[in-house]
Length: 565
Ligand code: GUN
Ligand code: ZN
Image 1: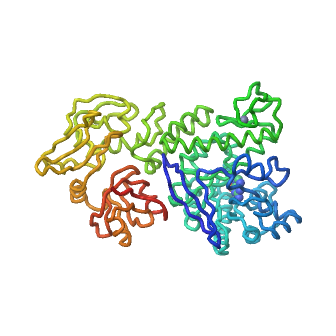
Image 2: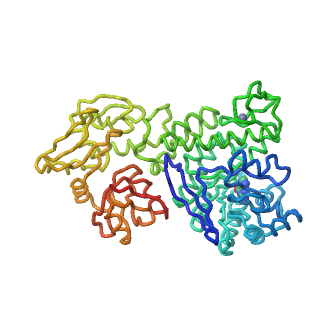
Image 3: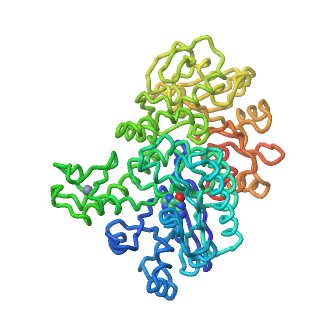
């Protein structure tokens, strides 16, 4: 099995991705992420596989290899038929090892290599080694010992070289140093990484701890890896987890909650007995009263709202409104609210991944966790001006850049003239002193007749078009001459995406730069920035819009890194 992943769209550290798994015969199965894996519980499943397929169009599901192994009858059948025939499911099947059973019952009668070989044998696409989930606030020595065993088993899984994508668990309890170490080791050897041992935190509404753990892991996971939040099945957390860079969720919650007559909403959980009215019109709730719903209906409903939440989040990524979406959800519960507030602590890290310009206007709800605040503050420092104006929540910003995203939403007029504006935007976009480049030209700045906004930057001496100004966000798009001057003025690696020789002829022809060919990326660039594409010797090849974060450019093996002009 070979797994590959590429980013189609992004917002904050969240991404819409294309995940492909190819088997030995090059048969391919593709899903879009963020993705929900419903868990098919083998003991009294509430929803059949047929229901998961027909009602939800499930393309990926998760079940438990150890539970299959434990039952003599199931084991023999699944070994004989293969897991896809056995379940009559031809999508992607992920299987968990007995780790959770191990944690619950303290002991299981199978070794790490045995369960892994069994997972391969039955033909699952995705399997797990026997990691040891360590509870939050474990004694540190125990957390360390458990992690040592988990990492040893990970090595063993790697060395077995199985025909299996290993869903490699990152453990470490609530110790951020252990989480970081685990993430580093695991993400070196596996492309699919699962943040494990977090279920108890979620049960206890310890969302701040959850955020810190996800961030500690994400900081140390290769940017191109796929991240699974193990056991994160409550839709109220999906938006936050996606924003932090999680791609896959498994939900056993829809069924476990249903067995307890608990009704999931994307803003919290209700006991069905406490509901007078149903706040939902999904097929399971439609035209019904709370007392009409049995366990099966509740499970259906719980899963409907979980899938719905994933779709809403994907739409928010498309619109670049994921922050607004997360903030809206944050109001559901004080613990979630606090967790979203504490994102301020991680603003700098997250801002690396966040696009510098967005498709939707910046709506401020008063959360100062937002990555845009960090990006604006750090770039506005490059603008030399005496005309600062306080724009909440960004603090003091140069009056000359009030037309650019995200400041444009406030509609504040400034007296700056067009040349001053263009110079300031140059500094904001490309760095300190970038305006000096313009000194050699006799600038003519033209406005659009229709919109009355700044549109073109010309040199009156040569009549050459130096750049255009994008109407939506007032970012400057450098044309050939200006790109050459930027290249001359700033030294490598600033503003540059360096590509391998083999890609140079194609990019010269105007083809996009694929992440696979990027050999170096300026760390201060952001997705959405205009960048200079150079070869390994820093010859300017093209200009274009960066589509990924710098560390994603060098980590991904697929997808477009620069959309070339
Ligand atoms: N299911 C929920 N959490 C975990 C975990 O940490 N490890 C494994 N293997 N399964 C899980
Ligand atoms: Zn419903």
